[in-house]
Amino acid sequence: MDERLLLEARARVLADLTARKLATPHAVSALEDACDSRQWWASQWPEGAVFVAGLVAQDVQDALLESVGRWPVCLQCDDGPPHSLYIQPDLGGPDPVWVCEETGEIAAALGFLQRP
Image 1 (cartoon, rainbow, N blue to C red):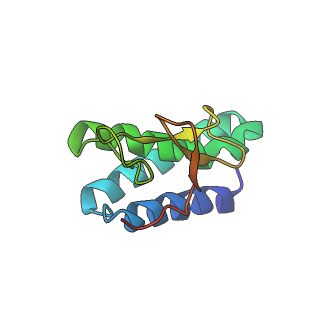
Image 2: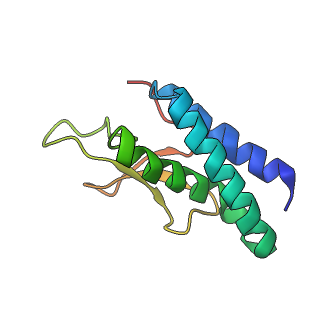
């Protein structure tokens, strides 16, 4: 796998963690674990390299759900209880975006979440 794709995936997820003030040691550790896991995954399926960024984001999201709760939370909806954004397309790429789980609207491209 092209190392640049993995570094780009890491940078994009870290940018979103930072934007939402969640770039804690625990979250960055989850990000590193996800990158390690997906590097192996992509080495087994080289054609899947275009999906790595979105899959890393999903892995971090899953890891954080257990420890800190929903991340990232949708900031666009004013009504109803807090809810998450999720990566679309489901396999994570190419060109992954964060989508509101309630409205289905695109909130941001991966790596471009807005600060609260």
